[in-house]
Amino acid sequence: MYSHTSGMEYILAIDQGTTGTSALLMDSDLNRISEASVEFEQFFPKPGWVEHDLEDIFTSVLQTIREVTKHVNKKKILAIGITNQRETLCFWDKQTLEPLGRAIVWQDRRTADICNHLKSQGLETFFQQRTGLVIDPYFSGTKAAWALKNWSEVSSAYRTGRLAAGTIDSFLISRLSAGAAHCTEPSNASRTLCFDLSLRRFDPDLCKALDVPLEIWPEIYPSMGTFALTRGFPELPDGIPITGVLGDQQSALLGQACVKEGTAKCTYGTGAFLLMNTGQKPAFSKHRLLTTVAWALSSDHYCYALEGSAFVAGAAVQWARDGLKFIRDSSEIEGLARSVSSSEGVIFVPALTGLGAPYWDPNATGLFTGITRGTHQGHMARALLEGIAFQNADIITAMEKDLGKPLASMNVDGGASANNLLMQFQADILGAELRRPKYLETTSLGAIFAAGLGAGIWTDLSDIENTWKQDQLFKPHMSTEARETALKNWHQAVGRVMYRG
Image 1 (cartoon, rainbow, N blue to C red):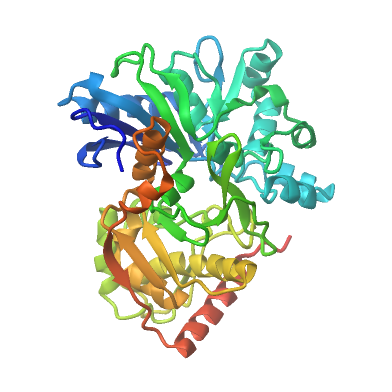
Image 2: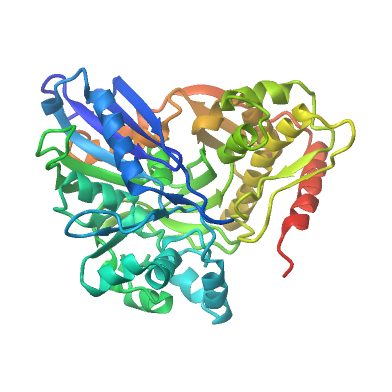
């Protein structure tokens, strides 16, 4: 299985997420050496706006790498893998590497008007056929158009030839290599609205439609292979190769060993993300799902996936903690939800930042319905968890229609997949089995696999399949009648939050 056997050597994974950064260090036999996580501040300048400070992000990367490498010989690190929040867009100066403003986060909805204008021009089919995506503020392209028009630092840097734009992976590669590389790979590039799935490149026609200059985007490399070498990075020696890069959900797909066509996973993070491996040809959805690149083993060997995303999953639990003050720690939500046997008719629609697939309504807002004098925090906590599962059921239904067959089982991961109440209700409302792996942080594991494949530590995707181990199987117990009634009530609640303007 392993082509590299020379002693204790390591792979470092950097998982740069929406609310924090994690680092994972493993040896080449996949023994976990150490891991660390650091949260950073979220900025909400206006309703619907979400931003990150890129220096905060870079500091969190420094801190986590310092923590996981403090007891090892750093010269023994063979390779680095990066996985990242995907559609979040960064702007920095090519020469100084200084940020030119905050990152505009994937959850941000400020470009809704730009999206509506593009739709009014009849461009939805054009973008869907070229990119596999829908026109929505979620994706990076409209963020670039907005920043070039509204942030003078960004437009000025473009005019003077100093602007670098890209997703988080591009920014981190640039910083880790002291500016030696401005690059990305297809799983991230395919989330910009500027990447043509068939031509496998940033496309001039797509950029023109968005009014975004083609030249601001990074060079595209395969997902596995050498991107750059570390240089001048405080916590690591020079010369360590970055050999694997994947967007976080594609990384979780790889970390879940979903390497064969038809295998699927759901990651419960800030949002919920369902991906199904569709093989080496893109499968275009008729039910408003996304077609995306899963990974590129080489410039001519691409793997694609079908994806549905719910913008709010774990973020709803954070809101219950920080906004509603129901709990002090996110892990307490399950106990509070278990304090009642049912939600007693309370339904929560988690449209706190609009609705994602299959509705794609950026103006939808969150809703609790069914509240009575007898309702208390336990009912609302249970409804909150059930709302996360209901969203995913809608996505799976759309996926089943596209594939023409029911989902048999799904692998689950991410922080909220540790919540047994949520996982059991998810299995019940889907009418399908869920399989939870022993190692839940499969996003980081996917970055380890990508880096190992890129460095030649593993030689084939089949090597990855042999690593997956099950922790728990959740089987559905809900009757068909109860499931249909619950889904009917859910869809009535969703109908109340959809934008009518």
